[in-house]
Amino acid sequence: MHMAVGVTGAAGLDDETIRMMKVPLADGKMRPVIQTLWDLVGRMEVDDMKSSGEHATRFDLTRRSFQRLVSSGVTEVFGSGVYNLGHGTQAMQFPIYVKWGMSPADALKTATSNAAESLNYDWSTKVGYVEKGRYADLAAVPGDPLADITEMERVNFVMKGGVVYRNDLAPGAVPHPLAVINK
Image 1 (cartoon, rainbow, N blue to C red):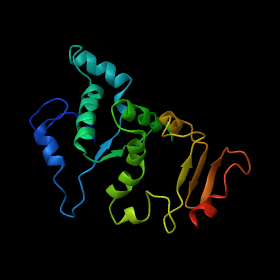
Image 2: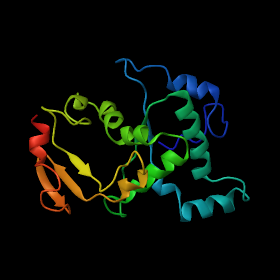
Image 3: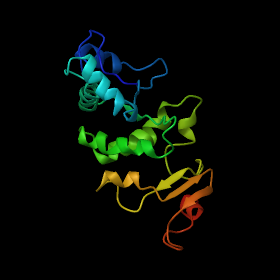
């Protein structure tokens, strides 16, 4: 998380760090990088500018690293810790991922299939994709996040384990969630 400096000390990663990130783990999986951005902005960014003599912030170093990782094809995973900010606030990361060079589809994968595949205990066989036999954990937004990734900041439907926890959709706007999953 927060890969801002490479193994040689280079800001924004370096070729050696990228090479090392592309070496598979013992189980053959790729080494994912968790990207959590929400905690790098605000007060921390102001303090970083002061302490660096107005030269750099961890947010800017993370941007440079993120862009190198994207262009190198290293798997990135959506960081979701929110501590005292409340659930859903971390969705502000999606537009930043896209601004920094990730496609909207790849940004969505960071929070779904990439995240599932980085979990231990074979969880990738249970979560991360919408298909029969997997847990029914879904979030829906009013528009198309592939056309406008900021739609991810407007979640209006949440289902976990087949139980609907939030439904701001008009009645009948979508088929019953279990009907879609059980096809």
